[in-house]
Image 1 (cartoon, rainbow, N blue to C red):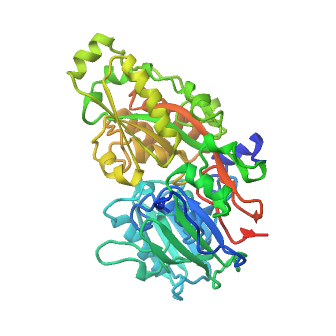
Image 2: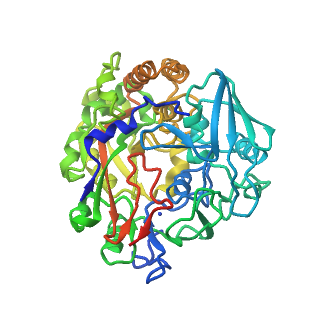
Image 3: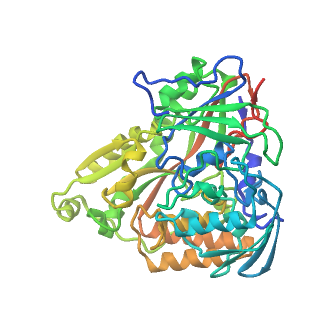
Length: 507
């Protein structure tokens, strides 16, 4: 079994900030097109595409996991910004950065130029659904010449190079962007693998792009199947139908052969999100009651089979600096009694949502339902596949959500997560939180350029968010990836942004 030692968890520290779903078929299983001796990688992913792999949706991470698209920068193993389509950059002042582009081509044969970078970033800024990574910043890109781009921000953004590494800000060829706002990465990325066919929400075919600036990939292509059922993903790996299966359910993990089971400390935190914008949890005392009623620690063994840690806050042990910087939470509302809960809810049912893409979450919902009912709530579950409920979640149609979130996904910097999920204008603010003190705390962290002070302000913002009881952390997950014994070079990424690159191949 390959594991990432605890000492390597420092890779997620902020110290080097500024360094220069095959929806299951009718039989619940699926087979990639590349079986046999072709050398193609067969991959089972968990969450089917929401918007045809648009980078402005949760689909963006698929483009980075499969090395389809790139941004100006990328994140190295230590969480620092490293060159990607930009070979170097210089900060001119607090709000101005200059990026020099490398010689590269898109998969449609056109050149990567300053104009194409400006075009891509302009479209991201104007997207109807704004990428989460732009929740707390306004940026403007200008082409100085064919190979030089100047990016300015409305206010100081000391982590702009990290922000530009977000999968949502990948640079695509001009033809990717339709007049109606749709964005297609099919044949328009710049990475070593090109999407040549996307079949709805079930399959995708990727071929090696031999014009990649970084060299020729070792695998000739990738055949992707989206299998939303975790047990079916594990079965596909065991039966030899796929070579790589992500997010193996903890109940299935120990059923895999030791040489195919790979545990990865993760920055993923599972929480109970309470809707503060509408419904019964607009009442702070009822949120406090829910927080006191819920005990996430019982999930560690009963639901996650030991592949999790009890929640410490929004950030768990994989975020190495968080524990030492944690701030005590004060000023919380007083919990209501059981009688007050019945009176306060006025006979209304608590609508508890979660999704099936992570098989542990429906199990957790059953445990939490019992805990909440013991506190006096009447609870009804709504459990569906994530893509079927995302719009309703963002529209505030549930009272509570059991949610699994990679806290350092968007930039590798915690501020972007806090801004998108908990500020009044956050584009992923499922909690509907509008709290002036929280907004101010997150803004203060975003403007801080000193690493140590930024970490302190992040943890002050965490305490402010927890004060509102808009979110109740439950557990910090450990990811389990399934990889066949004859596959080499799979990336075990605690941030869950990378999986396959030019070195990933069959032996």
